Length: 172
Image (tube, rainbow, N blue to C red; front, side, top):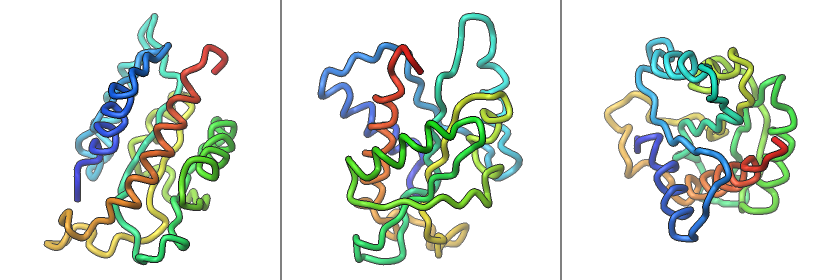
């Protein structure tokens, strides 16, 4: 599976290409050890609260490179939301409709199984994007980039970028 940070790298590339100068500091982070207890994200979230450093929003892209169908009209991203971030979820839904060719669903079943969860526990506004389709090759020898759908990944990345730019306001 391609690195989770590939969408982050694309967002950073597009921002630089378009000479975007954010009002806030943007950190693109790839976490480790999510499969054994979210160790990397717990550590990072635990160290972001020192004086003078505030995380305005955490956008988590996890397993966004797979959809089962090649029919683009059926593509959906699952927006896993958290109770302290319903405004973020509402905005993400609006931006998804406006800037992408995919639709969305909201299934919070696995809200505590990805890197966004430790940030939620620290009362950080967060949202977690994941494909709504179960990845058929998860943790198998066929878990390779040729089994990913980069067009779908691009659509979710557009959504993340739009949400990131929207969140870069003094009001949030």
